[in-house]
Length: 391
Ligand SMILES: *Cc1c(COP(=O)(O)O)cnc(C)c1O
Image 1 (cartoon, helix red, strand yellow):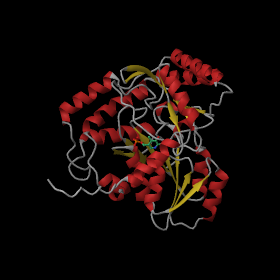
Image 2 (cartoon, rainbow, N blue to C red):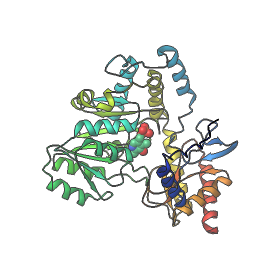
Image 3 (cartoon, rainbow, N blue to C red):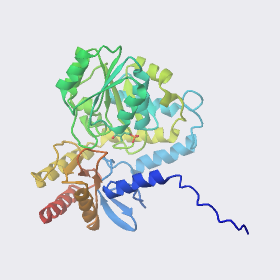
Image 4 (cartoon, rainbow, N blue to C red):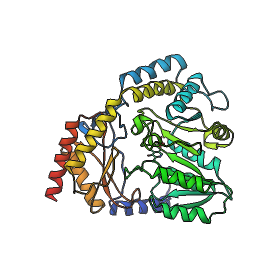
């Protein structure tokens, strides 16, 4: 037994504790919710079944039997791990096949697949622009695009949301060697669609490249071909990115562009080069998902009916303008957004309260999915109406 008392150890993480306490006090503390069932119209949370209005499984494909079967057979055929990076020994025939199909589907000459959309954004922006170049970005772009712009070391110019006059002023005064305009095609927290025709016109006028992050448009808009098809636009100047964990119901992302751009990314995009390839079984699953995206037009029709139903029922109640399955309802403050979410959850509905710093203004983010019947959305609208009437 030692007779001197142990010194109190220093608290190495007390400053982290303080930051977290501040977040709690502002109603901004984040916690994860544990699911006990697959994605679907209903999910099991803490032993309770909840109607799921907060996933990005827009087409209801995340638990589709044909895609599950393709993944199972893919595991039999290719094993589980890819074993290596794409540039070493991890690039399989089924990766090639998927890239071809994805490129054809969005009307581009070539495509490159990625493990996640976050990595695709880091890869494209950091490969295409650097010191001496400039990237022009909407202020409401996804966090992964912002991180990509910062990491690139290019001059990072942000313009107010969808403000084409502001973008034009920035482009007109830029002396950068390479200019890249980078935007969400559908804004993830607002649900509105970027003014793609104007963006393309400015890109042409100022000889800039246009990078579109279509995480929320792919599979949903333009008969499933995404936001560019929806707008009736095509240009070799556009570098198109879609994520595959949302409407496609699987995981990953692809970038589609001119062959020279794809070749450049394979040679210079560090987040592509220095990572292990996604399991080839996922590419098998994605090939089937692409077929379903093409064939099951009823899933998009059902989404349109849901959007119309919700917007009619909640007209004048604070829905933000949106024609996509992302339908945010503005809340007076973060505490109210949290309280709404909690009350709806007691009543069996699961919706996310989205708060700063993710968004400037707190809101309830309603995410529609073809997994629901239209009647389920009508019932949700009734619940929300009751909630707002009580407030
Ligand atoms: C989800 C999302 C991403 C990231 O994609 P992951 O595949 O989930 O990494 C990128 N951009 C936008 C706009 C997104 O909503």
